[in-house]
Length: 423
Image (cartoon, rainbow, N blue to C red):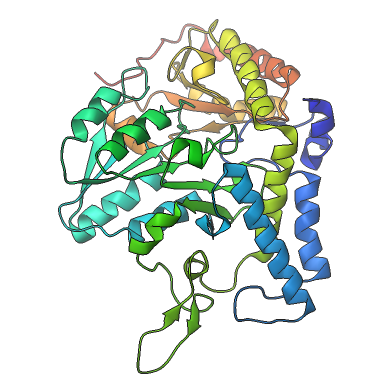
């Protein structure tokens, strides 16, 4: 990839503060947007800003809106290699996609749902809510000590015939570790258990082929892959629609209504896309996946791993820092997350921003349950560097140099190295 050419598409990277450019390492939260995506969204608002959807307006602007939205759906279908465009549902984000499955799946009291013990809250809380509301049981498949997936633990969990759904993060937003999805899906399907993958951290960074995986549901967010905020997508394998309940109902979900009998609902995906939608955002979503396809997902992934390898080698020299997850950069993809183990280093993220305009994330990354279950000390702080295709080796060098300068400050001299876990 020609990274310098790519960076020219992202206008925020040309800004300066205090004579220094931004170094954006918070891509696991939200990526920057390239000019083609912004142009596609602006075209909607400036050229044909009308209602789309079934049964609404049929004039020139409305027809153009619908054509562009359906073209975006088709682009997303191709991007994940779904068999049919009607298997792609537009949502607001990954969270809504997972909730849609949770609320429409035909669960009964006593059914069991499996997750791992390091899921993002978006793939934890919906199942806990169902457990409290309708009496399903949420059960955890614990990961190994190095945070990799435990297939033996899954095999044991699947022996219970009450397991009705497995919902796993495809790539962890905590440490970047990818689960062996194809093997997991094979094992689950052998027991008649469908699988939902939280693809928020996988779909933006690597080729995800839903047909090759055999996955039943895949949720992801466009704001993590150069697209607009407030737009997500949910892949549902077509055969599952027959047993799915309705989600949000009302305008744009029906063919016809009467006052004295139930409504006649539209077929999927439209019955799951209630009300007036973010048409400009959907059009921008299509432009985002087309942009990524032009660059090539393999090239993006290889670039990120190369940067991760460099950062991993550089961080290893600091005894005050400890990388979360397996030591091999290839197993952590675009994410380098580490603990700070000296008093005062909880402010490292703020200090990086103030000194060198380096933007990272710190805290629990919406994986609070993992931190609590592993008794991570409140005296240490986790910092996450999350990379994307427009990040450079020079930016990584500035990051390591700035970390080195901060750790050499007199204020940190002689302070103890803190234990990561509570006794």
